[in-house]
Length: 271
Image 1 (cartoon, rainbow, N blue to C red):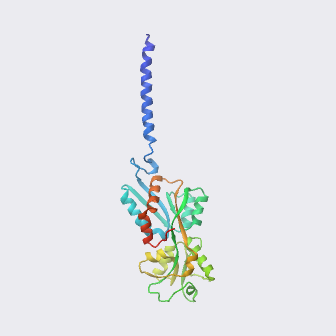
Image 2 (image 1 turned 30 degrees about the vertical axis):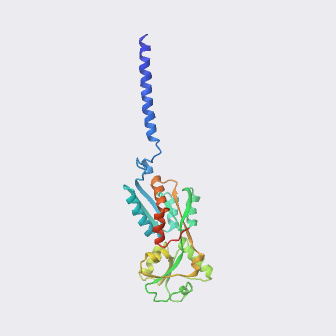
Image 3 (image 1 turned 120 degrees about the vertical axis):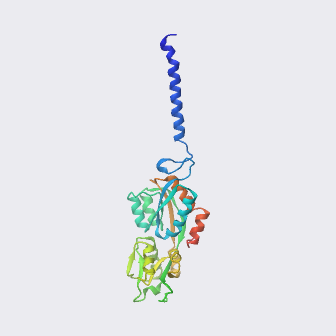
């Protein structure tokens, strides 16, 4: 056997060894047990890192509670919320704002995101909400109906018609044949509620969940026309989510029995 032939087995063994190393590395990197890097998954598949959630202002109290539950359940994971008017949040998402989850107060504002191709999968309705009048504490103006809001001298604030609570209010007014000119239009439901809490307005049309969250700072007045303007709330994971596994885990919590309990206690209706 010449010198060249004696070296061949060594080269073959070296090649096999290198291939084995590459295969082992490839097997580790393709393990489907959990996401890594930007997807926010740990080695065990548990979510890690920050989950950014864009959510309608009316979800603030219940989602904040669920966020704390999420962080307790998954040590090392955090939830960063951006609460606001659904239309503004949708515009931010389609404009490139980084977010993992979007929870909207209406299908119309969710459609802005889905039409732009920014949703991963089909949005699902997880709760519903209906309108209620928020009057000053103790209801000194004796408001008992939607029609009472049209009284002369009464300062009423409404949500802007571009946001879900404003669109729902317009539907309720049209159903009752009423016309109402508010002293101001607010860009989200919390801003409208705050006007009454600060006594800068006599009443506002908000969601029943916001009246409940106010904890006695305002007086809630139900009105039958609200049945004509019940809002569905859809939620979806976003296509360009930087923390996909975290987004999936947060959606799972929202749709779980625990999530439904928190949302129900806040006054939301089941779909």
